[in-house]
Every structure is written in C-alpha cells, then in structure tokens.
Amino acid sequence: MEYEFQRHDPCFDQILFVMTLDIKKMKERIVAGKESAVHSRLRGNPDAEVICDTIRPLGTFLLEFEQDPAGEWNRYGLAPLRKALHSNRWKQPDLEQSASAFLRQKYQTGDPVRQYTACRIWEGYLAAREYRNRTTACDRFMDMISHLTLSFQTTAETDFKMQTGQIIPPVPFHKLPSHLPAQDTKLELWYPGYGTEMECACTYTSFYPIISYYLNRLKDWGLIFRQCKMCNCFFLAKSRRYELCSDKCRKAKALQNKREFDERARVNNYDLLYKNECQNWRNKINKAKNDGFPPEKLEKMKGAFETFKKEALQRKKLIHTGESSVKEFTDWIYQQSSIIVELARDS
Image 1 (cartoon, rainbow, N blue to C red):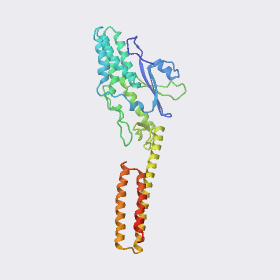
Image 2 (cartoon, rainbow, N blue to C red):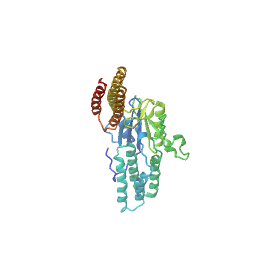
Image 3 (cartoon, one colour):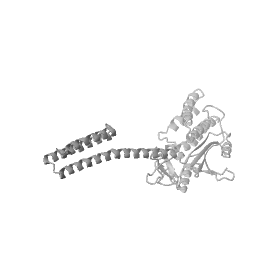
Image 4 (spheres, helix red, strand yellow):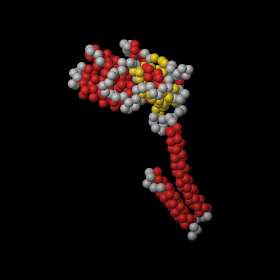
C-alpha cells in the first residue's frame, strides 16, 4: 500500500507491528497495519490493505534496526507536528509539509520499522487534530510516539562479540528502567494459522519487547551472527564454522580459490624453471671440475653463475610487482642456458 502523508480521515484503530519467525526457511516476516487487515494477510488474503508485508532473511530486523543517535525522528518528524498542533491554521500547512517530507523519505526506504513508525506518527497527528483540547491531545500523542522512537537512540544492534557471535542488544530487557510503563513491556502472541505452527509476535507501544522476543528465539534455536568473508555482511548461522552467507558468496569464494590456485601454479611453474636452470649450471660446473678444467676457467663459470642468480632474483621481483611478465622471465632463462654451455666447452 502506498501511504500518502497528507490530511485525510484519521485511523482511530490501533496500527500493529506483527512479526513471525521461520526457523526452517530462515526467514522473518513483518506485517504492519490495522488488526483486522493484518489477521487477514496472515491467513492468506493478499488483498487486505496493510502498511507493509515484508519477508526477509532471518536476523535482518536486528541487523538493520533503525539507528537515530542524533534524534532526527524527534527533530524533523515529531517537533514540527507538535508545533502545528499548537499553531493557528495559517502556520500549520508549512509545518505539516516539513514533517511529511521527512516521514515520506523514511517510508520510501521500504524498511518495515521506518514505514510503521512514519505511519504511526502521521496517523497520531491526524487523530490529535480531531480533539477540541489540542494541548491534551498533543501531550498524549507525543507521549505515545516517544516510547516508540526511544529505541532508535540506543546502541547499534550489529555490535556483537566476534568470538561467540552473540548479539549485544541496545538495552537488555531485564535492565529496562523500573519506571517504564507496563504497556512498553507487553508483547502479544498470535496463532492465526489454523492448524499450522505459525507464531506471531505483536507490539504497539514499543519495539523493546519484540527485540527481546527476537533475541530469545535466536538463543533458543542456537543461532549466532557471523560476518561473511566475501561480502562482509552479517548473517545468522548454526555454528562458528559457517563463514559464507549465501550461495552467491560460496560461488564467488570457489572462483576466488580457483584463481588463487591458478596463480600459485603459474608462480610455481616459472619458479621451478628457475630452480631447474640453477641445477643445470651446477651440474655443468661440477662436471668441469671433475674433468680437470683450469682453475681460472672454473672461477669464470662460478662468477657467471652468481651473476645469473642475482639477475634472476631481480627479475622475479619485477614479476611480483607487475613490472614484468612470466613470459619475459622464461624467455630470459632459456637465453641464459647458452652462456653456461659456451663456458663448459673444453677449449
């Protein structure tokens, strides 16, 4: 559903954020909207109008959870609407336009948390405008939404212990402030599947309980977060031995391994050629020594051999730096063979 951030009849029903986790398929599904519409969607009706219905890899909710340490949701989304509720009708359009532009931008990201929060803010504002006592309505609206956006200003969800893959939640549920309203800790569980094992977690006031629910489920299933060695993305795995997140990365890793193997084979080929040529020089020098070559001629052969090895090492370095090619090196090696052959001739 394409939501319009403009004046319309407000929705006085609760707009719910509902999540279901599928361990078998390693997927998460998030549906947001009015309760009746969400129930209809979950029962298989694709025509039910909801704010969002998203299926993503398991763990995405935690990894991509909205972060707002600078308080932009309050500054650009809530503050203009709060001011509009306390302003005359001539000033309200500009303030509404400013807030709606920010909320629309968040909504268009396609992230269900941002979409849900943006719609809740706008619908809450429209409902507050309907009351005669704007001050009281505004206070209730701000108090209600502030609990929803509070979780955005906490530590990033992707912080976790690299050794164990254990996620560090923004605010551990058992350490929430004691004065937190009871509704901020509530979480409803739905079983709308009629015979299936579907379990849905539903929240309205705060994201904290659904974060806790998610973390507890992952702990129960023994899943941990890992970082892919190919794309550097985080993903859920059953143990620490998993290092790649998808078939795409596994194929890319296999291709990389093949290229590295081919490169090593190529390097080993010219290195082997060099070692064989060195042995050829040694054999000829030893034969000349056994055949009774004059000492001055043996010294000349040994000096040429040292010069050959020194230049060969320099040329090998040029290959590693990319300043020369393997072909140039092998051609040079073959040319050097004639030097020792000439020196080894018995004059």
